[in-house]
Length: 345
Image 1: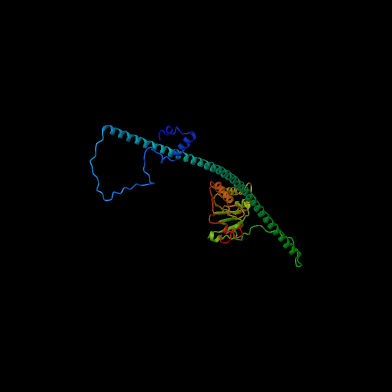
Image 2: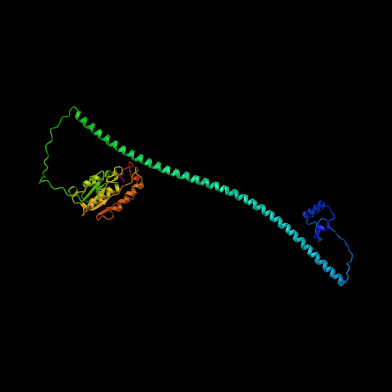
């Protein structure tokens, strides 16, 4: 088998190639070293014959050398067959490995292509989401603006309607059959009556907007003389914060500014309330002035009210006799008409 070509030299080229291909396809059958076969079996029956025993006999030196040479030759041939078979198996493994690598490369290319397509779609979805968020933010701002405009129009309409009702009521009274015109009123005597006892000066003064409607002053300030004055906005509060108007009270509680949210006073609600606090601190240095920040409302976003209250806190922190009353336990659930406090609040 090691020199197979020389044994087939007498054959034509085509026949020699066919025999070589056949031997290469079945290396197990064609080998220089005899091996065992499982196709047929020889069975020697000795029955009950007695075994033959004989002494081993020595082999001469020349024959012993020939046998040794034959053993070496058979060992080299067996090793050659094993090496050839291993080479064949290695070649088969290389071929299988190449096919596997080619398949993996194709799968990798396909996966890479799908990954690029997925990343492209993801970028498109991200851009679409970003555009939708911007559009949503714009719509929210427009909705908030519409709500503010609607609230302002409703407030203006309510005021005009109230004025019209008052005018109609007055006209109905004037046009009634039993109505007579009264003579011109005589000027009142504004001189103080020395016999009338002087009205005691208030110890607590409350400057409140419409949220002070259900305020229980006896419960809040038991045993103290309390006087409440209505002021719808910070402008009216600025006009009332004078000693000739309020006297010299021990405590001044101011809760206003909510109506300034939609009609800003001198540059903004926070600035207006800060100016009001500074005026109170300057006009009443011996009084304890308590400023109540804005309460939550359903027509104004919570973050807007929070930012205004934070600005008021920062601006009033350095004023000597100004104190802030934060209402952390009051929420929109305490409003009876979505804007004003109920009795429980």
